[in-house]
Figure 1 (cartoon, protein in one colour):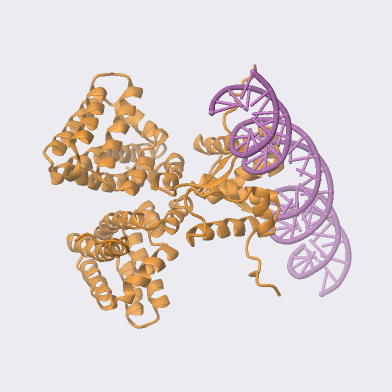
Figure 2 (cartoon, protein in one colour):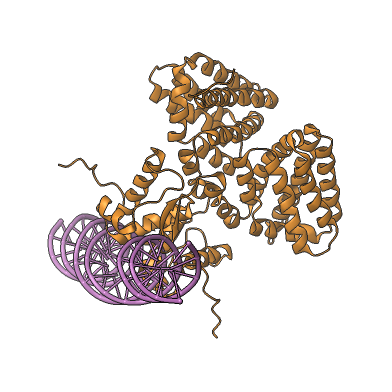
Length: 242
Length: 242
DNA sequence: TGACGGTATTGGTCAGACCACCCTCGCGGT
DNA sequence: ACCGCGAGGGTGGTCTGACCAATACCGTCA
């Protein structure tokens, strides 16, 4: 009868799509404030409960941001906003998928490091060195991990592709690395890690993209291989073939 | 007083974290059914409304799946489930970020195609060829786009890394490609696209990873360069320097 | 003019009711 | 004994209305 399309899926799902469409069509600009929950519910002809679920969904996706007492706003829709959920994937993955994620990280990280070698500025390089020295000056695994993350984060930022940096951030999220890192470093990999970081740093200083690519790939690849071996080893507690 | 941590953030947000933690700790297995919304709400000491928002959030993230009349289940937590939201990023991005996304895609797609060249089976190759011929046998842009997507999807699958394939799927999502593709193909790029696809196919048949990498990188790079030029051109309607 | 405080606005939470859908179990027919 | 099917209970989906808590606005007062 009316112009509204036939109902497909839940009303909440439709509300999510409609708001996404509004943003996609440019009717809602980044940073712009939306009508109140109550008004939006009326506009879309649904209850406030359903509208709240839709808003909550878009909030966790990093598309909207709700400020208590103030209103609902569209985020800046920058890479960091939208790719924050990428960390969830890393956190909930295990077993073979962890290896796959590390493989993706190896590919992106090696390219990012290569790009950084070509583009990095003296200031950025100084920042990288700061974390490198701090990392080598302590034995506290927590501190090392923090500077290790920052080390790679600075390099990714220097590559000049915010989207790639955001993805790498998700692939190196704190909980993800802590899980793999712990076991890896327990086997006395500290020395090796330091050598690899030093190699990456040398390549950056020399502005040598190919060396940087190789060093980064080897760095991530070491962890990848270790994890692969771990999985292959513990996969067969009972019964071993002759 | 009690053992519950001090309140941080909204109750819904806490509920989301708790369920995520349950899955992360293995207390909830993939495919397993959760208690009812009502029971969960009681367990976490919150109202059903808030619990529903938490469930909805985890549903859009691909972690949970609600089946009307049946119950709430943990998804298989496979790459496809969790990375489905990646398409949202592609759909809502525009301007410079589209170029960045294409750059990421170029890096991953070229590597995936190289891996596929080494590993692809005759059956998979036949599937790729099916879409290649179908793509060349019609003039309907819609049909071409569909087979184009399937062509690259099959190759990504043949690379053997489901996570990478899922990310590429998001980076090639229907709405994303339609937006860029439309303008690109309007400039008579059909012939060039066919040549590039043929080159990729030849490399796959020859099981030549390096040729495959180069062909795929060039293929995506063409679109990337076109888009870059588009943005540079329309970025300055008023005032051009001498 | 500027700091203060009250009040309207707005998101956050809760409670209870009803609907739509799925699944199962038992009834009845074959 | 077996099969089909229909009613009922259980579950997610939606709506309503109320109240709480944080914020923003604006008028008042020093």
